[in-house]
Length: 337
Figure 1 (cartoon, one colour):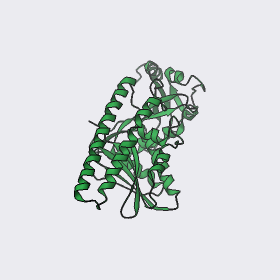
Figure 2 (cartoon, helix red, strand yellow):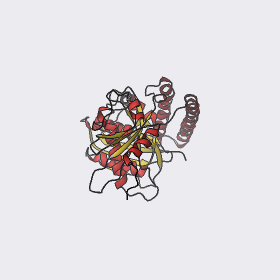
Figure 3 (tube, rainbow, N blue to C red):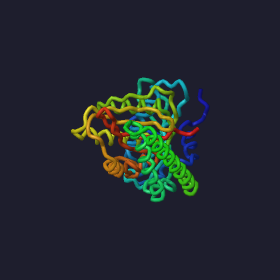
Figure 4 (spheres, one colour):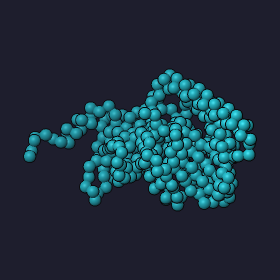
């Protein structure tokens, strides 16, 4: 039935009214539709045009990550929750002069065909500062907290102390760790209020994240076992997390003194963990600190390992196990309800 309404003109009118940039792309990331806000975001350099590649405007890897993650999410069954129809992630212009918080979702298509997609871009340059010195200074609190927690875990694994000394030592370490954690969290909350920081993280759950990481690590021939506990929610930068996991795995695989690398993804009381486990040489604390300061190629804002982890309130430390195996543990906090 002909309603007399020009559907294309109506869609263009609706896009024009949106305050965020909107770009519609075909399955090959060729631009098919966009609004004036999107043009303004990119300063028309290069100009947006129908048929040009989205990747001439912004970084390709984060978009492809979002497409793969969204496709994985749609294929996986999910019994306990309704997941978002889009993937949120950070991206930047090709030269990383501007940063955007993006939401990407598929457009309806026939099952046998690849989907076109729409990407919504929000200008976050007023608050997203990858190299914010005040933020990084506060995050330096995490190092002693990590050392304390690692010391407690190491102490638990050694049984040569007398029960009385062991109990006293554990109590001191645990109490100091809790005190330092409370002090840090209070300072971090005050800083966030002061800077009116907005999160670039996206809500997800461990079922989806563990499954996606398992599939990804399979391409590196690294076996991943995951927790059977009920899924919990976390706030994460999945693109940044995957970059860090890849970086750590490659570091370990390149060392000939380490063999039999595997990964365990599991859920604790307050954190989720990704443990890289191998037979061979333990990574000392000084080496872990050096790893944290290395820049990650392809990251949004040319961040270091610590920069990406700290943005998610994450930690990284190493452990020596009694069975001659070693562990490099990445921890991320479980989302508070």
